[in-house]
Length: 399
Image (cartoon, rainbow, N blue to C red; front, side, top):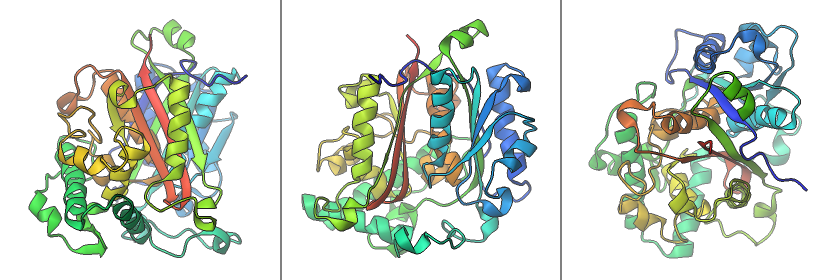
């Protein structure tokens, strides 16, 4: 019977490029920046990496549709390099592939790396992928802000939340991320923004204003994984191990049946339940130390608090306004600025979230360091609330 991968995989090293408008570099330089940091952190030689999972979602112009550009950029000669794509959950998908390879015993040391060069596309939001034969069969005919605005409407209706209360809670989500991002040297947006500015910003898709929407960025992030035994043999004393990685993908039931009321993301709940079971977590609000969630829009973070079962249903607005998820709250969320301010280079985002958890667990976060964290959860979404993907990873210090 399957038991999962809890504590079977250790993170040997991680790296993250500076996110932002990186006009001066290409995807290959971003890959090298993240990989170089991860390799130095791991304290191993390039030749010791036996397999690579490379994530790229929307960057076909720069990196193509195979793993060859990553293999060439990082000089992986003759070893397996696999390109993966799972929309905005691509980074976590790359980590899942590398971790499963190590846990299975197929390889001793593997690399997960993701990159996206989105600013070069010229789009203000996520660019539309090149037209393919299956595109019209599933791609929702809506923009990302419009799709997530519908989530806000569904949530308001189910819990009878006033428009004013929801707007203030969403503004607090964005305000918090800007406060946190200001102290992160690798973040794309490093400017604190007032509540007044957020509340009075232009509307994008009712009720989502300008500051309720994350931007897009260039960036890359990487993780080198191995077994705890190998990590210790290499001299690692403080080990961060993977407690769980779970993925849930929609079958389309949200759009074809009446089992979903539009107020939450079903896949997040499914992935969270399995991740908690794999990690042995029974009281997530009490046991988790920090959260990195897929705050592509402020309403997404708000709803995700309930989908992760850290806020009771209908109570996320109150918890957010009470500061539960602020830096000094009971369960800090987006301590690095999140997608909103760290940035969202699609295929790198899941690994960037894990990078923050890893950095916090090892006490390396500098100005934004939390006090004695023990468990860090990362949550990725791909697609839209009614047709998409949810990926969850949980990291913790080894016993």
